[in-house]
Image (cartoon, rainbow, N blue to C red; front, side, top):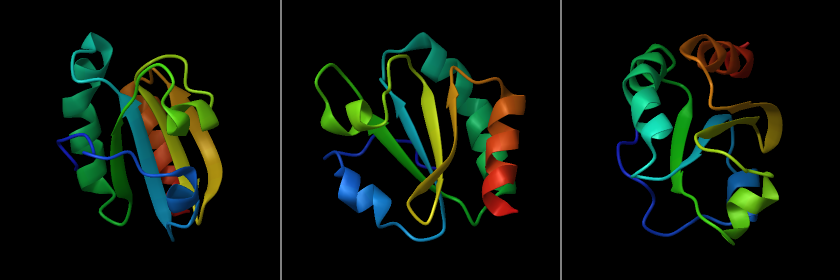
Length: 105
């Protein structure tokens, strides 16, 4: 589980080039919805150690978030080999588990 936001935002090309299962978490450190999801996400990611977690501090005009049409936080984008498998906006723990399970099937 990545507990800190990336210092520099990866590019869309870098995200698309990541092999295997990846979940990209878009949010903000001050976001109440994001902070409420954190313990659930940590617990769920521990059950899926093969999934790479990338945490991105998003904001207006940030190109990576806009490339995934992020409008609300947290938004989780589930990718396998650079292809979007699922997207969850302000997800429940059940939705996160379903997204992670879809990545690892």
